[in-house]
Length: 79
Image (cartoon, rainbow, N blue to C red; front, side, top):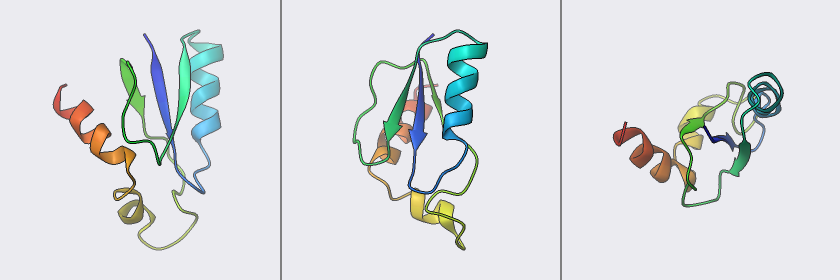
């Protein structure tokens, strides 16, 4: 399986997710910057915990407008 970990400004668990996927599970993984508009050929896309856009009120509401989220919604709709 190939994994992608979405990275938002201020998120703090993306490196933890990357470490677990690559070192513990031994699977290929890439970081996906929030400004990308497409996803590569991934079998799984991870939205790590933490605070996207820093520790501010409604940080997730800001993240949903990031360019990558359209591709994430399409990926999720495909199951």
